[in-house]
Image (tube, rainbow, N blue to C red):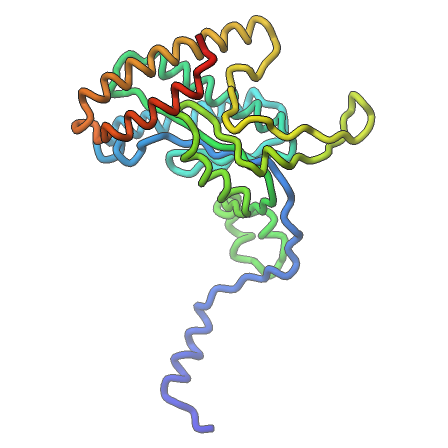
Length: 269
């Protein structure tokens, strides 16, 4: 067959074709996944670079400080206005989520400038997860191996999508539990019992983070924080209604978010 003029061009394009060998990658491992992010970050960015910078700085500071306090094995991937958290064990993930949302709830309560306040929410799922480090195990994937600081921020799998999509169902300052984390849970080795035990799936669609701990002094602090948060949030939504066009927050969305919030915090009195 006669060689066409374009064949040489196509041959040269092989030099820039990206190569990746998936063949030797191990299967995904099942993990708990949490996605927490700032509500309305797009309108924040449209309103003020300074305001969104402060909000982003605080959510990522809270996440890193929580990891310093959490001695369980967890991983975190920051994504602009949010954070992915993964862990094999349920309690390691719940403790991290609890520490983050408690810190940012305290920030909201103690910040008295309505313009500077921001709200977070999140979701938890459970299922197959593959991270960037696993993708770098094959020696043929040399480009990825040479840039581990980049590939360490890669995270993929059904549980990632589930947590991300379920976040929209969460209350402001709430955590929604995807059905995967309500119906499935892993077994793990308990040093205390000296055997493998099966953890219980999470029981609620809305996870009440202020009930996480059983330590009396901390529990009373958390209940007080939830009570103050409820009061300040209702005041904030009143303010939002009178400034909706200026803060780019539609009144129908304000009502929707307030209704979900009141349901989530209904038992906080």
